[in-house]
Image (tube, rainbow, N blue to C red; front, side):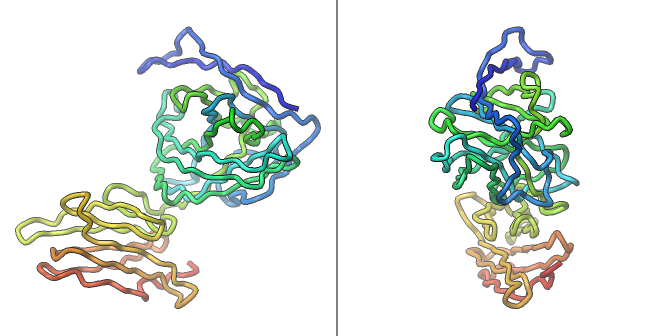
Length: 331
């Protein structure tokens, strides 16, 4: 049975410490199945961070073409890299099983700890949503390069609910579940409302995440590869200059490139490969388009081991094909 309920969205003035007196209302949909508890199936991010109790009594959506629901998740330690997100869905129509939507990740730097800066988004698909069981769908987040140095992040989904009226993000309404921080928006995250302010049954959403603790934290000068296990940094030096940090750009979870003088001018490409099944090693390969002195450092953050590769000044960059780089498989 589908129910809708109006939610009051209190608009916050830019820089204001208290809500404006005027409230803007929007609606949510709630999937009510009295007496039914849905035990989840699918990739549930086992061993990751969750705030639900493992079962779901209902589901929610925000009515509109930009339905958005996010939940606050805190990694067990800092720094950590977001590596995977798992979202739980249920349908109220057996014929509706496929939903395309966007996975969303926000910083917790909004007013009062609300969702703030958008850290990353990825277009994803949930194929095989059930009307009789809640189902998790897992997604690789390595290309989002979301590092958490302190505090928390908000993870969730945005989708066109008008075009996809049969889908709900799983909801835990068990009274024994500690209340999580859940926010909804119907205007692409421009304004947020706290679910518990108007939907007291809401305790937690079926949104979970996995983090790589003490792993690589990406920035303009640090390339994080293989789910944040490996960090790549480099310096370059001209004949008359001082050593300078190279800028990095990520291409895939295995591969990225360096640039020195101009972001349109690629100087070297590097990749780290999991060769554990072949020779019990992680491999490092690199190729360059430069003849300036280049020092590349690759670090296994899990084992705190590093390899340094040097291209000498005035020498055409020699290919690196190190298939014995890291003997840290299985650790």
